[in-house]
Amino acid sequence: MSLREALPKVSTALPGPNAKAMFDKRAQVMPAAIKSIYPLAIKRGEGAMFEDVDGNIFLDWVGGVGVLNIGYSHPELIAAVKEQSEKYFHAMMNIVTHEGYLNLAENLNRIAPVKGDVRNTMLVNSGAEADENAVKIAKAFTGRPNIIVFSGAFHGRTMLTMTMTAKKAYAVGMGPFPDGIYRAEFPNVYRRPTGMSEADAVKYYIQKLEEVFMDASPAQYVAAIVFEPVQGEGGFVPAPVEWVKAVRAICDKHGILMITDEVQTGFARSGRMFASEYFKEAGCAPDIITMAKSIAGGLPLSAVTARKEIFDGTPGGTIGGTYCGNAVACAAANKVIEVMLRDDYPGKALKIADKCMKRFNTWKDSFEFIGDVRGVGAMMGIEFVKTKAGKEPFADMVNGIVAEAWNHGLILESAGTYGNAIRFLCPLCVTDAQLDAGLDIFEQAIKTVAAKLA
View (tube, rainbow, N blue to C red):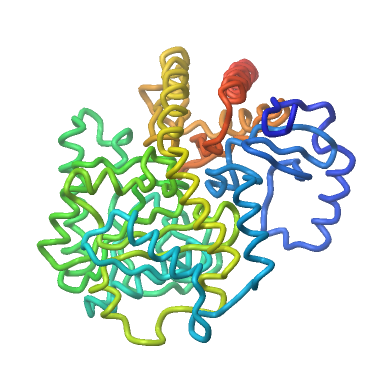
């Protein structure tokens, strides 16, 4: 059986001897601030599986934190990268125009669900770069200095995006931070005020947003409102469509641009190529979309797409960079889009979500410490609490489950402001047998850790 079809199998203690040697080297040559909690060192990967340097086989439900929606080592992706690499690796668009950039921009202009019929796309290298450039473009177009972001947000680790990010564990000792970034409360419906209906919660969170105009920045000075359609680090919390409709109306009223950060939600994860397609279907499409992670199957690349009018407001020379739109990465991204559309990866995400959510909700009914199960498509999260009534975060349970699961061949990752959620970002090419095996390992890990903590 090929690795692509294999099931999880762990036959050594973790880390194994070869992995241990690599971790010893890591401790010598890498900064400790680049943390890793996993005793794993990869040798090769195919599909949703990877083999470590000691021969153990793992099912990866993290996927490079959302980078591997198309899976490890897709044969057509490898062929596209090889073909481009034999022509040239790099051509900087300020100097020499190359076709891969143009074709990718054309593809993204066609599929990105932003307002306006005539779109432009710029390419950069990381999610943080995409978010930072989106803010620059919004400020240039509106002539305004401020932006609004949200509690629970993660937008990156550059100085600007670190400021935009809510969780300040990612910014310890890094201040002072840029001015002009103001924060509203994100609509975490699960943690809405006690006794409040979901409909009233949407109104409550909109009121919290409008209070920013009084308490921090008047609306006429706000260039953009930036949010993730499903918060990633924040705990896989979806933005309710009715809330997005209200945000869109606020933006239209005050001349503010609405930016959706689709770095993690993009490229079929949500059951659409972009989660913002749900917003467009509801009549509240964003003005600007940022994207990265799964765009190129693992090569560094990101993008910003908006209507041409918005880009036309950006002064020449203020955006771009040396590696932006690298030729090899563009070849990979164009192939990713081709394969995902041809093979209906959004449909794969919905099929995976249907199976997983049924199982997750069964666990929610069975276990007092599972407070919430949520998500959009195959971007799903489970929030663990000490009691359903109290909703007190139960990070110890999550940490125990993650460790128990990896010892049996399933890689999970925590998320959430309090570290008490487990996220699902498995490659969308996972087989039914692998998905079933993962669900079984996950369930047993929950039971094992629950018994230990009882």
